[in-house]
Length: 357
Image 1 (spheres, rainbow, N blue to C red):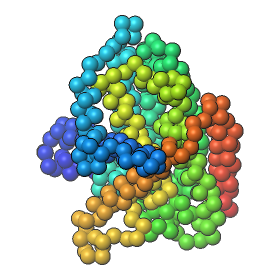
Image 2 (image 1 turned 90 degrees about the vertical axis):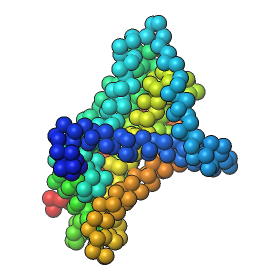
Image 3 (image 1 turned 180 degrees about the horizontal axis):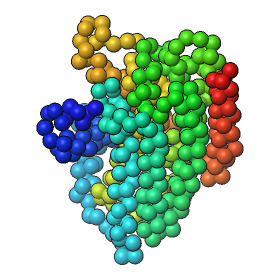
Image 4 (image 1 turned 60 degrees about the vertical axis):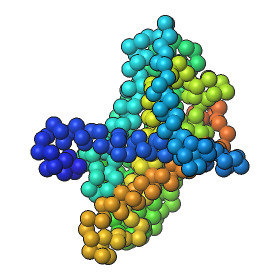
């Protein structure tokens, strides 16, 4: 959809494609990452009865920009025994996997990179690039801590993708679509049409679905939390054991790319949760654009609601980081294989039976 607007504006397919490719990076991912790093510092500070950054800008608002400028000027250190081609390629692949996910995320009815029918499938598939990049970084670093972190991360991401996929299948069973755009459109109207409240339309089946939708939401949120290596699932970069995990050997802009990818992933998984269960870009209360006959205002309102929902779930991720202790490796795997996968599978079967009956 963005492509059509850009093509009309530029008159060139090539320029429209190039601008569309960089549109989410410069207009959303970079500003979001800068804001999220500052927010995380402030959330952690206030939870620990501190002030956090206060010196650079109002309440430290420019601190992250100062840090990025510092990282850009840092020396790019590559050790003699590193596998240099793979070492240099790894952060690019990790960031590319995180960045590509945004192609299928609908920010509003008018702003979506690629309105493909297999949006959720594409997101799950392309995020696998991150696993390859992390393994590459750990192995190419020629550092035992980096390799251990990379192996932990690969095992964790691959394991927690299973309950994520089962929950997605549960939603597909009800809605019949893998497109996040169509899924958001199905949940239009008001908040009682959201999937978390049983989905659109009246009927007894809607109320029967509600408890199983809540179970699906909790499983999806926990699984995506583990997939982006956030506390209590941050064992791949457990500083008390592994220094900094798979990016121990990285410095300067390469380290910043891992950092940027982590925060891009945080919003991406939050956006998926919002799109699947909480109406996506749909307003819970209707639109001012409809009330005042201003159709151009509706996409802006939708963008606001989608971003607000995503930021709320990002805030919860930060909240959990400073609330819960880190799990051990065996506990992390037990949560997935002993609890989340069996519960999500039973949930899938019950929703299927309700749909058939």
